[in-house]
Length: 266
Image (cartoon, rainbow, N blue to C red; front, side, top):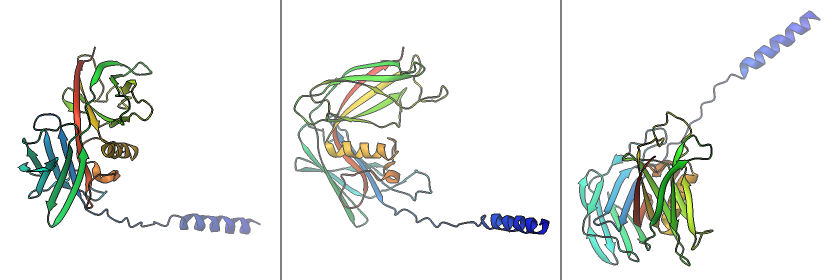
């Protein structure tokens, strides 16, 4: 009987040992793509395009800036060439975003051409900005209020800055269930630790930008948020959000209006 028990234990041990086999999974690297991030706004001279290259998923997000691209933006058919002011950054002061105008972007680089189109919406402004505690009363968050125009499909993106530092959290809303209504919302950044540097404390300067965007840009930021991305520069590659750029590049081209308010946290 003891011999049988020993044989069973030895067999079990050998079986357990055999389960420790190392499985080598070969992960396919992500294709390298161009990343284009372009904006036109109703701020004077605010027309800028960033061109970079994505990286494989197992590398950092410090994307390679792309120089030498030919970048053009047309305003209702009038085309303007953008100058490269820094590596991978193309700008012009000759375009001032006008509500209702259609803006078209073309980027040509290394034999490839990418394009996008976006209509700049009518502006909607922030009515109120204040800082108040969240549901548990422990952490403070920015709260905003605005009035959505009735009978018009509108979408919005909100960008938060604390003491000049942009918060990476993505805030977007549309008026699917709030057409023509007064909207009050808390911009919950997800802060839940006292040592989080994004925490809003007494005396902090908080600036909120409210961007009125078209439907394609709402879809871009909403899909990026849903995929777990953030609003920092060059986050277009990992999450592969819905883009309005044609030709195979990642990123977006946004024509939008900007309304801004500032408050000092109590």
